[in-house]
Amino acid sequence: MKFKNPQILGDIALLINAEFIGHKNFKIFGINEIHVVEKGDIVFVDHPKYYDKALNSAATTILINKKVTCPEGKSLLISEDPFRDFNKITKHFNPFKAAIQSISNTAVIGQETIIQPNVFIGNNVSIGSNCLIHPNVTIYDNTVIGNNVTIHANTVLGADAFYYKNRTTGYDKLISGGRVVIKDNVDLGASCTIDRGVTGDTTIGEGTKIDNQVHVGHDTIIGKKCLIASQTGIAGCVIIEDKVTIWGQVGTNSGITIGKGAIILGQTGVTKSVAGGKSYFGTPVSESREKLKEMAGIKRFLKERKNS
Image 1 (cartoon, rainbow, N blue to C red):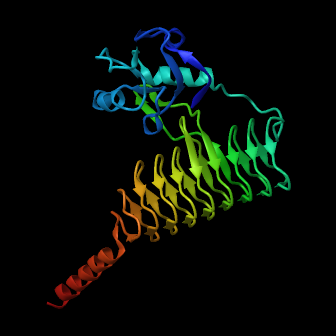
Image 2 (image 1 turned 30 degrees about the vertical axis):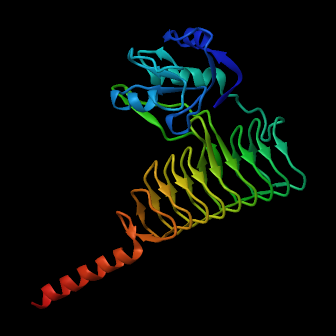
Image 3 (image 1 turned 180 degrees about the vertical axis):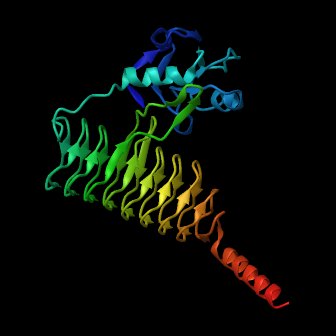
């Protein structure tokens, strides 16, 4: 999430009541979660296991719960609770704005786009030309939709990321400040749910077709010309490269990559990253030929044992 205007380290420290290491006028351009962080961003870290990853990331300001040596060319914000203060920054620069009508007057809708009854379109949404949005679709704030996109009934774009911190008092939610971006020529089936990024974009690439009842988690990037069948659940921070085919009732772990042209057969659990150009099946996931050989071998073994 980029700020509308550059900020400085001293002002951010004042906002969250944190000590800082670095020049007070050190420039900050945005706030991002570790998976999508860029130069000029703040990233937060609150566990020693991930200190090195955060300090060596592209981020140039690290919100951290311990005084450490500041890497050259970077700055630190020292906080007793980085998770809480990351939320505070998100809310300050991207506050929730309640809707006052079904289609916001800040939404931009292209020519020849059809909006069916009972559609909700939030603040600062952009919809391209020649789209068809069917009844009861919900499009949250800041969503971007390209041209020639069809969205079927009851689909929801831009709900919050499923991202919580377990505290003694219960689960503390990481506030979502990202977007959903749908490229040109995408079809979304009925009752799909596409969550927005925590701080970045959840993206559906050009020409991709998604069946009914598919869930796409936060910050996931789906490439061009993919086919995804119904009841598939894609976790957060997944990368699905171009021309991937995913059949029904597939589930994935978070943070994995599915390579270009891969085929994931139905009811597979994609527990790890897989290379492109191959077919996969089963849980844990394996190349489909190998998995079918394993299953045939087990079947022969059981039959021979029964007959012995």
